[in-house]
Length: 314
Image 1 (cartoon, rainbow, N blue to C red):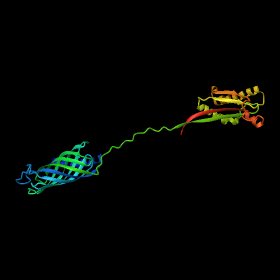
Image 2 (cartoon, helix red, strand yellow):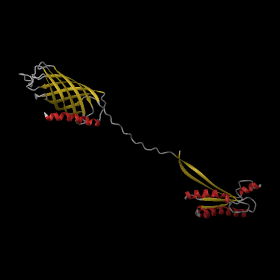
Image 3 (cartoon, helix red, strand yellow):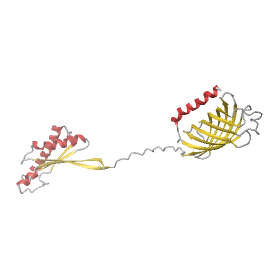
Image 4 (cartoon, one colour):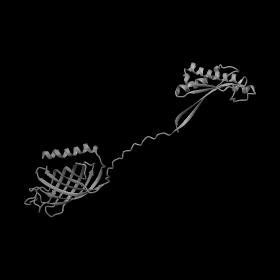
């Protein structure tokens, strides 16, 4: 008596403590089944209620609640469909299921009330505990079969045994579908295109001079920066003159002008002399009309250009 009295509240307490661990959707279910009651022999005077011919057979209706894959509780009403002792039963049971398969064992415990006509005591209250097996016939239809032992706690100490089979229909029960994990997609590689940057140096000289005026310093700063950032780039400086003077003199003068530019980069910016080539074209490549003063001033020049490629995202 004490053992069952401890087992019943312990099972219900464990159920409520574990509801938070639910792995499936909770749902309500209705059930229909049959029970064979092997009643204590002292319940009905001179009636062998444990013999097969005199055991009550009840048809049962139940309403239950499935908390998750592990726990359920239901209330059952049953009435005798034989003419043996005309018994009826009302009970509430908690169930603990084990395993993850469609067919799984369970243990049960609960409280019940028996009414038996012509019995020594017409109605008694019991605690019960048992075991059984549950099988999923479909997503919503469950078969359940179990055995329970009942112990009266009204003072008479009746011992009863019940075997039950039934079908339960679960409403709103949904199959747990594993959440598909997102497949990591490779990061898209941004498209790139080639861009060419152009850096030009243009120095103009006074007539028959090779000195570089301070006004051109910003241009030298830029060209020197590019050369330092790109050590694989070399530079060619071209020197030019107007047509005043002999061809030979103008050729030498143009070479001196390109050398002045080189010296400025080497001495003023620490650019390696090996990276700078100089060439003089004299008066052979004018960019303006040598017949005018303005044109001749434009032709007295030294020029250099750097073309540097780089990749940028489109």
